Length: 210
Length: 210
DNA sequence: TCTAAATCGATACGTAGCGTATCACAATTA
DNA sequence: TAATTGTGATACGCTACGTATCGATTTAGA
Image (cartoon, rainbow over all chains, first blue to last red; front, side):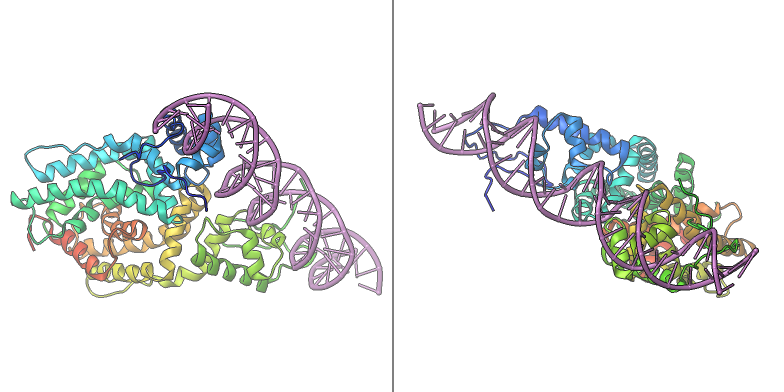
């Protein structure tokens, strides 16, 4: 087991405190090319059909270089996905927390209906047999949006739009899960109308016939 | 391309109208052994790690025999899954439709928390890169339970528990998706309490602070 | 009873991608 | 200049794919 000193190789964002050692640097353009090739292939053929050799070929890079920089496919794919998708989910800020959430849900629908949707689906799919990918998806993607959403729920509670007895995780799961479920199963279309229906149902309730 | 006359090979349930031709019969015990080996391996290692050769070895069968009977892995896995799981989701019949659904959701939680849960997750996961598996999962598994559920919703509307304006598919997606989402993402536990919270939220609504 | 048809398990085949190792060369630092 | 590290190329053994072929076995019908 040879020790490679500067090996980053992780699911966290790279390059925090480079130890500054001798030797040739890793080319950042190569890094970019690999991430782009991964993104392209991911949306074209999906996670499980993705091969390191295929990515290397598309990026014009030796596959050794990829294995040197990422410990596994999941890690690479997650980096590529986040680099591309992180700026895609801005949170609106209207006066009402409920309206904020409703609008954000419609934004999620837009993204899930774009080419990114297939990627998200394929990542959740791959997570079912790749524990590292699953962990990366939870901590590096979902947890971030969940934290934002919880802040809005908190605002809603302070503004008396949402009862303080409500469990935020439960509420957010109830609102957002149907979007992901339709993305994954494709048994019914994923539309903005669907968002409105869910939101109306959850705000008014069945007994409060709207 | 040699023509094999009696080849069943489909995602529908086999043996409808056997053309009754000459030649040796397919051994039904072999059939059973293959399905059982598939179920075992599926819950042990998941869909995408499953190999036909592995199944053949476990079942004590030549892999040719499997390829002769099923067109692909998805088809075989779906047959194995349904043979094992079909009788697992009985619908309760209390007086109230809402209560029926609540109890059935708790039953689903039980199943998803059992070893079958891993299988369901792995099937949905595999569906993201296998269109045939996806189609089979929708039509041979989900559609059946969805039909049952819709009947209960209809009963609920007739009994004035549920407003007639409600879209049944939307309602059922809102109720059940969070269960599957927690199964797939594993970001929070899947409990009967969770079911109660969802049901309370959807019946009372946010404004009707329960 | 004999013949044609179909299944059976076993085995071999070429193909693809895995992850590792080794190479000569290039870039960087001390 | 010398030591160190990254780079792309190539070769390695491995596993599973899906197909083809084999002799043996079971079955239906003439």
